[in-house]
Image (cartoon, rainbow, N blue to C red):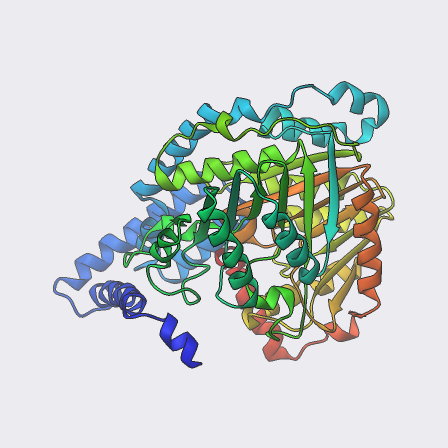
Length: 508
């Protein structure tokens, strides 16, 4: 570990890790045969485990989660049920759910655009209407015109545009990121934020505590506050085993004056702009939007700020004066959260796959799928749709990459084309289909992103960026290796490891 990392890894964070490890050790000690009356304790725990299995089966939940937890509990009946109770039935989650419901009640109506353009879409392009109506009518995220977009890849281009827009800020800058790390990218941004704060501009930053756990010094929030930058840490890590710690803010949002917004896969750290070589060339994607649709990201940020601070904002205070912009198709920002039962990100992906007629091209750093998504991909390929998926060749987590590769064979068998990005690590999260619809966002194709993280993205319809995303995808294939069935012939040990890891994929 470098001297810099040693400095960042403060004693506070060492103690958090040690205290969590201590709790796990005590739990194992109590149930492993060293305590008094162990037979009675074991019997109670086993009965508890079987009751928990019945509870899990009766729940309205993903079958993958049910199966994984059931297998885990039956394999380890003494402590499996207790482990489930520790991680899934705790008070803080219900409390957060109530707070989110209150925030949505106070702010949801403000998402509505000045005019309803659903009748226009119904007349011009009825094919996309069901997805538009789902997001606007049910999930609460309206579709906009009067908006322009720019697809930005790789991260170096997004960084350049972000710097340009930050310098133009006149009223406020809102930044919400899973990862912030000191270096060329963040230090350049921070320099601008400090100058703008001295000018009286409202600067706010949200970062995730797990995402930055080993990357930022302890109490970095106070460091930013001392510079005049308002800051909150999402879901600060505490030395207790708790369900709530599993929920992370994986979103990447930058909003300038409510008129310009950025989102996509790019965090504020140097590997995302290839200033450092972490896993080979880092291939990522982002999108910048100007105009009415940026208001949705302003509200998303303020909702998260309200959640972290436990306050209700004067949302209308941040609404920009409307300016006329030459519309470029339709733009529909969206968000997803793990507290409610609505899997917005997954539903968008499934809708795009299921409604593809000619092709669907997918970038994802991880491919850890539930049966619903696997079935949709396979059915599309069997129906003659050109389904292509690009994943990294250079992995960042070996066990996750092992699980990713475990899906290759069954997908290739039905005609899905799988590619690995030979130059390094692809971190883009993009879907594009039939030259009509695309999405750029933060949601990976894995269980954690789809069900346990706060995420966001932008849907694009009949927009020039749809064609840019397709072009970039086809250009990327030129530096990818297509995976064949021969490449999927692993040795017995590797296949065994893949099968074991895949059983527990929903917990990754």
